[in-house]
Image (tube, rainbow, N blue to C red; front, side):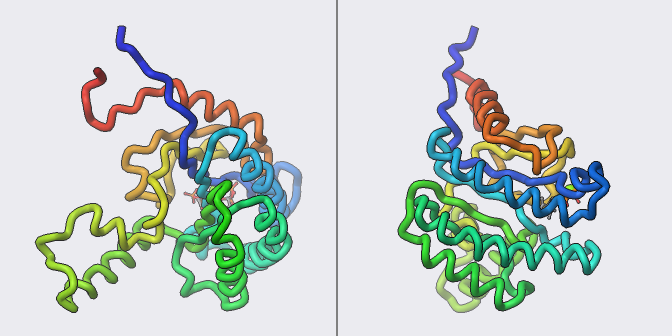
Length: 240
Ligand code: IPE
Ligand code: IPE
Ligand code: MG
């Protein structure tokens, strides 16, 4: 028998919030109805983090591939993000949440980017929970953008190519201030990562659950965390 030690709560949980469209469809409603219901779920999960021992929560809101959806859905989502940020700002500031965004802002409209910048600034001294929202985020896109910036530093003679290792590249990623995720949860029954935190999740634990995102509750979140605590993480070593 190995002497398995119980994991403490994951410091960083990342969530692929999937299933809004199917949730709406099951109710005979348009997909955007599901996105609104999904957005309403976020607060409960963020607020449960301090009690559950989660310091960092990263949520996937819109991928670099989601532009392939219909114009109606994409513009509805963009409108929803704006409304959401405006309506949640006060609550996030007062409840001690530090908000950051990852992803490429270049394709987002300037009103939305201004709201994102404001929210980051307004919450940057908070430290109770660190909420990162992945918006126009793709793992490959992030690595490509990081590589471009790293290449510029090399070309300018500020970094010697011989000194480049994985930590060097990690410093150029959008997530440079965050610890790697310990646990990645995906709702809606799909067992894939869809370009989310590819680099950072090298040693993350994964949990795929069938619940559609708008039905995901604090209680289910707590039970996923309890399951995590029974796992043994080896990082390539032999358990001792
Ligand atoms: C996740 O829900 C939210 C976004 C990708 C913006 P989906 O919209 O992917 O919902 P399903 O997968 O179609 O049910
Ligand atoms: C991943 O979900 C992106 C978000 C949750 C924002 P998708 O629904 O876009 O992923 P696929 O298309 O099923 O892989
Ligand atoms: Mg989906």
